[in-house]
Image (cartoon, rainbow, N blue to C red; front, side, top):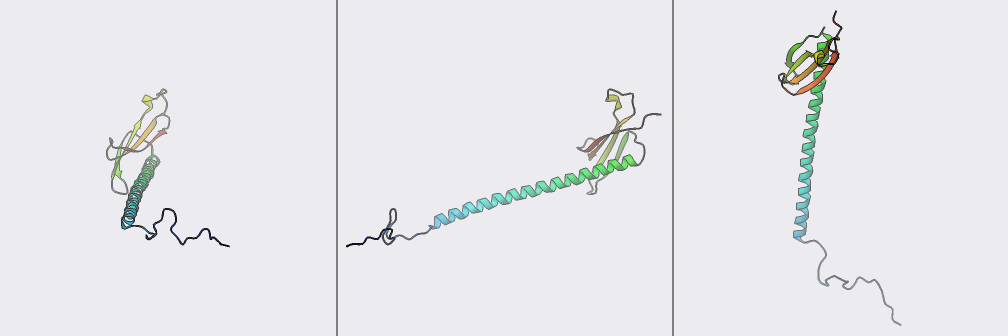
Length: 140
């Protein structure tokens, strides 16, 4: 009686060379390293751009908070009147605060003043950092 062993790995299987060795060629290894390097470069570029955006966002948040504080100090210092005020942010960049009465453009323009405060970066024509409307006291 003959006994047959099935599943034996001793001989060459389908698609295998009887004399070859298993492994990767130098070209395959170099290509995989190149792909990994490109992936790392892309990841580093994305991380750098993200950090730059976060720094800009934090700077703008700080600037907006400081601008609001400037406007609130102006309101707390006494009655508002139309005009310009200038100063510098904590980081040294200039700002301009424009206070104007906008009741002339409102439908009920005979009421108390409505003050528009616009704090801009740089001069009056610079980009607005903070804008608000405040009701004034009725005219006596």
